[in-house]
Amino acid sequence: MTVTIQFIAARARIHWPQAVFGTFFCAFFSAGALAALPIQKFQLANGAVVHLVESPAIAMLDVQIDFDGGSRRDPPSQVGLANMTAELLEKGVMARSGLPALDENALGEAWADLGAQFDAGAGSDRFSFTLRSLTEPDLLAKAVALAARQIAEPAFPDDVWQRDKQKMIAGIKESDTRPATLARRAYSQAVYGGHPYGHEFTEAGVAAIRTADMRAFYQATVVACRARISLVGAVNRAQAEQVATAMLARLPQTPCANLPALSPVADVMPLAQAVQRTIAFDAAQAQVLMGQPGYKRSDPAFFPLLVGNYILGGGGFVSRLMTEVREKRGLTYGVSSNFSPGMHAGAFTVSLQTRPDQAQQALDVVRQVVKDFVATGPLDAEVKAAKDNLTGGFALLIDSNRKLLGNISNIAWYGLPTTYLDTWTAQIDKVTAQDVKAAMAAKLQPEKMVTIILGAKP
Image (cartoon, rainbow, N blue to C red; front, side, top):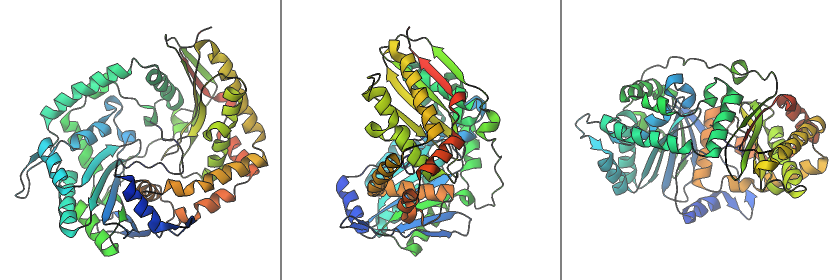
């Protein structure tokens, strides 16, 4: 359950033509120069917090609503509850206030008639809804009204769940035959221990989930006062407030109680000593994963760590790991490192595939590269090249509604300043080699990392 660290990972599941994206892009950029991205932040009467970017170039609106209800809130005996709840939420709405019930087919047809898209999903930290609609007044009003029904009045049909549950269990059984799945599962358990970030779907866990459990989870999670709402599109503040209010209007408008605090990863799984686990598996390629708990997204060393990871293993063919493991020794087609920060300390992970009889040799090289990098830090030339690449590619990180919405929603979720996008390149530019060395040394302990090798042979 990780998210690769590339600026801020976008989660909205929306797919529209590139021509639409290009129009939006031109509204913010001209002659290769970045313009400011004014983000308006305000709070609704019910306590929900709203972030808005006005984009009048095209008559379209994208909305994302996030709640603190990701898989980290799953009960240990029902891992997958948040994800399954999100999946079943799209299977129908109840009859209420004189409006008829809609099953999954009728609901799909209703969205198709509006030419709009609505999705629900759950990640490690949050439970999310996304809406995309044209802003023609009648269409937008109907799309918002239907979204409000789906958010507040999901049917959670038991017959559909019994059908889909069997598909889920069959999918888990099939994935458990894949070496990558087995390696990832063993790695997550080794890095996170009993922390929810390390939980993985199991047949027993999914089988134990009932629609009654989904309703209880949903009622505790999707509460108007906890919503973080992000909007990008052709609406002004007054219109955005109307849309945000309407989408939450059918939810209970009650004060929010504090959610239970979750233990830090370090308390659940302290990094005491190196652990290596070798798993027998007959495969053409051995899977190698090495790492440890990393850092939270709120860590002030985010930018030095971003630059540092780019140099170490996040920069593709120009990274140290790729140079040493692939270019110089030919031990793999690809090797990479990444951090996955979230509300808790997500893992730092180095991953590669290699020929089974070369697994230990490749691992030895990886360990030495990581150890040397943490001990001595990067060269000034490496830092300059990394910063040039990251800042040079910044525009591509927000060149579509989908990407921008994802970034705005992360600003809202993690409480980042509304000037975050405007100052991003400046934050990268001021990182020094010493900053990278200090940050990597503070976070990484090469002598205590977890290693999983699946499918290696002598």
